[in-house]
View 1: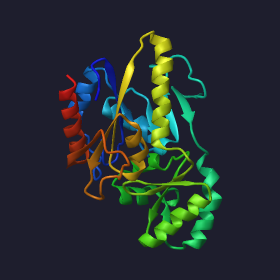
View 2: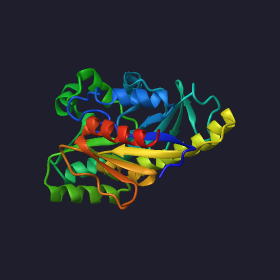
View 3: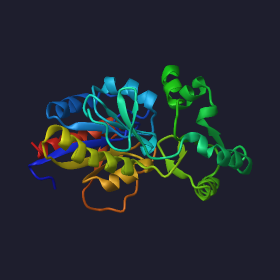
Length: 282
């Protein structure tokens, strides 16, 4: 349970959690996001989406916070909130970037081998046109173009059986890849996970922001997500909020304490749970 002197920090999945799974709407969460902003609570989008997508989405959400892309592959911290470059980062446009894994090209040979072994069982997102991605995801074509600008991970659309899918996952794991299940795709990438990126960023908040502001803060983390690729951050946070999905079951966690399940789906469930948490922490 949070102590009165602890500062809240929110790590949130996007698709199916903060954004509606079907139409990506944010109407249900805007009032709560405004309350969090008024209370100086940072909301950190932690997503499978790309850097290009987040540059477009962050202003729509009214957020000027760090964000985590491609399932924990990289963290981007706006230079406006942290003037000194954190150790181990590089300067990318207006951000400090911390990468945790190999580039997408690292996995291409293994994926080509998998194509032969699992012929007809999957399609690579990055081999689709923007029109095809838009039809599959419900994104506009411009949004789909941003989704295709991937640096670290390879989303695949699975067409085979459940048994074949498990064999494919085991094959990619033997190649050294991590396979994460999202709301629509399997994501092939390195050993990066949302939870690893979250813990690194928490350390930056504790260390680098302290040096910049001179203010010591004790942080209390809340993570919200709906899918298997959210498990690592849900396990790492002080409070895990599982968002109900119309398309799959709650992600299975090893923890039992500090877990909240939403009654409503997607962003309505997000707003429901965060409103309750804010009421308890007034």
